[in-house]
Image (cartoon, rainbow, N blue to C red; front, side, top):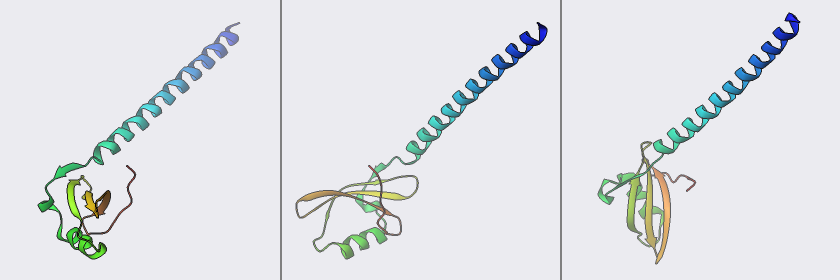
Length: 105
């Protein structure tokens, strides 16, 4: 009888520890996602703060001079540009070197 009780107690402990570990992992993953989202936040800056390399890339890559409506920067020194070209508003992303990058909005 003692062996049966011991086996049941051991099985219950195993289930309890497994559940706790899974919950801890889920919490850690959620926390990491929140940290990444915060680090990727863009803060609005003035167009004058835009690096020269990005200004040159805009002039080089657009036939018509785009009108910068809004400029944002994140902690990774990536820039979000909201601009109007030929009456169409678009959003572009660039790094500080003036290279266009792909970002999911």
